[in-house]
Structure formats: C-alpha cells, structure tokens
Length: 235
Ligand SMILES: Nc1ncnc2c1ncn2[C@@H]1O[C@H](COP(=O)(O)OP(=O)(O)OP(=O)(O)O)[C@@H](O)[C@H]1O
Ligand SMILES: [Mg+2]
Image 1 (tube, rainbow, N blue to C red):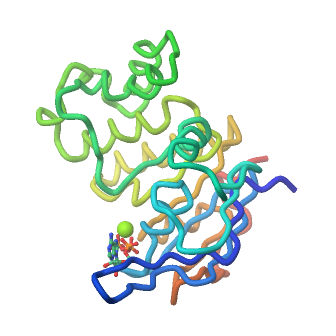
Image 2 (tube, rainbow, N blue to C red; image 1 turned 180 degrees about the horizontal axis):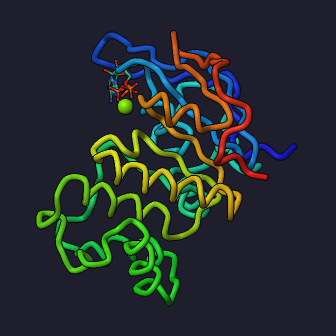
C-alpha cells in the first residue's frame, strides 16, 4: 500500500543548555493515504513535537521521515518547505495569522505564494465553508479566538492538500462550531481522499477516526477502542 506518512525510529531531543529533553524516542508510524488517525496523549507527551517534526518544521535528532514517498533525509529546510506547501495542510495550536492581513488575505496567501491566479475566490469559498463568509474583511485583531482559529483552518485547507495534520483543531471552539469544522475535515476525507492526522483530547472525535494512537514514553501505542463501523467511514 502507498503510505503517505512513514516514520522510522524517529528521535527528537531538545537541547536545553547542557541538558537534553528527550521527547520522541524510536517512534515508528505508517499512515496510508485516505486514513483518519487520531493521536492522543497527556500534555507534554510530545504530540506537537511529533507534528512539527514530521512536517519538517523541526529537524529530527535521528530517524527517517518519508512523506508521500519523498524522504526528508538530506533535504534543505527550503526543500522540506516546498514539500510541505505542496502536500500538507497544517492546523496549529497557535494560529500564526498575519496581523496586517485581513481574514481573506491570510487564507489566500498560500495560493498567492504558489502563484495560483484564483486565490481570492478560493479564499472566499473556504471562509464560507468555515462559517466566516461575513468576516472576510476583518483583521485578526477584529476576530474572536474561535474565528481566528477557523481562519487558520481555512488557510490550511485552501490549497487542497493530500494530508491534513491538525493539532487540537477544535480546541477553542464551542460544540456546534467544533462539529462543523470536524464535519468539514471528514467530508474532505470522504470526498477527496484527504488523509487526516489529528491530535485531540476529545475521545468522541478519536472514536470517529479509523484508529487511535497514544503517545507515551516517546513512541506511539495502538488504542483498540475505535468502532469499526463509524458513520464517517469512507466507502
Ligand atoms: N523548543 C523546545 N525546547 C525545549 N523543550 C521543548 C521545546 N518544545 C517542547 N519542549 C518540551 O517537550 C515536551 C513535549 O512538548 P510538546 O509541545 O510536544 O507536548 P504536547 O504533547 O503537544 O503537549 P500539549 O498537550 O500540552 O500541547 C514538553 O515537555 C516540552 O516542555
Ligand atoms: Mg501540543
């Protein structure tokens, strides 16, 4: 099968002066295209570190990372960024919106960087899908926390990536908005075959994925409680 994510013996340690914080230790992960995978684990277990490392935003201490058949080994930060921009949509815990750009301009930015002509229309369409059609001219400071999060989600999805990596995507949202965003992600999975790797504290959300992995002692362990026949499952 074609794996969209392949991690082998991944280690990530942070240097802190003379000491070292060991976060990921010999972590292995294979995710097939179209899969929905939930990652759970307590605060500080390394979930964000895992997402940053596998998307090339952090350099691993050792181990191998292959995304969509392309190894990160020997790739420069620029080359990794190109790979990321092309294939991956990342939804961060912090929103990283550009304060001097409106919601629409923030969402259109990845398409403009990629030289696409229809950035504005695509951005408007995606803002509509996250329920912010009437907020497109607002600057980040003129949006609520949950609205900023939805702008960041729209920006991560606008280039129709094959892989969406999300760090607590619904962390700041009320139940209804959260359900709307999750449905958007699951629809993309079902209709476009988008692979989902979701970090979440929400058990209900984890149950709706194909499988759940717990990050513990630096590596991933299968959790066996996922229902086999959930309603969002791709046919
Ligand atoms: N840049 C850094 N330098 C040093 N230590 C770091 C750095 N980033 C994270 N850490 C440490 O690595 C560990 C894992 O952090 P990480 O952010 O990956 O955890 P997490 O599982 O995402 O937690 P949360 O659920 O709270 O978001 C933590 O103990 C954290 O203090
Ligand atoms: Mg985190």
